[in-house]
Image (cartoon, rainbow, N blue to C red; front, side, top):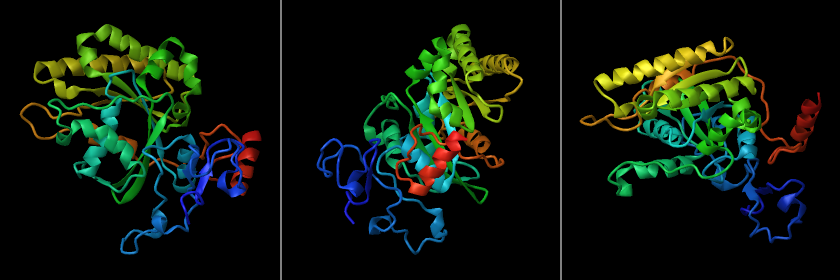
Length: 337
């Protein structure tokens, strides 16, 4: 089966190769809207190796890109399930670095009780990790900034205490969240916020110490905007203070003091949500070999066993890309009930 034959079109109203007609009159080989169908199980390139120990139904089809868009995220969750995590931060707070470090620790087997078990978006993680590696030839580790306007979803599968957990990590440019401080109602349009089981509110540790008042004020306003615009009671909130690796000695005590004061302030602003604090440092401290302090503990909090939740689709349109006719019919009935 060719790549075109096992593709579907992301354009609403287009039947794609299955209908034989492109609504934009592209040759199907050149259409920019085609994506590999998650239902395309018959192609040999999607076959699960027979010599692996895990059951065949533990595997899903490989993603056709470095990240999931909303439709492919929905398709994956319907097929496999998972834990959606919204990572909320302003520019330069360390969001992309945190995501890259979670992957790098898991890939290298450096997380206690959590083993890397695969990813459908390895390319997306590798793109975020490259500048921090020796092969990039940079003197100082760096992380590429997120450039797209909407959310991208990264997938990471971990095995924790013998149980598989599929983490779906939402990555959106920090500028979007910065604007939401002045326009809180815009958060209602951010699908990853109302969809997430865990919400990570990132605070730049370096700024929290050097400019505590404006940094804490911005975090308070962003948290208040979340509470007032759809944060559900069952969602867990984690205040993640980044860049702790830049501090040592007396300075780390100052960072902890400022972080605890901000945590106490956030807890006063809503008695419906418990806020957890985690200090993290992605880089290696001077004179040390290890990196990613506090991140393994954060991941353990994200993978704690909880009761099942009813699936709620991200995609707003009535038809879901890659879904069966029956599934789309059931989705429309649920939406109208």
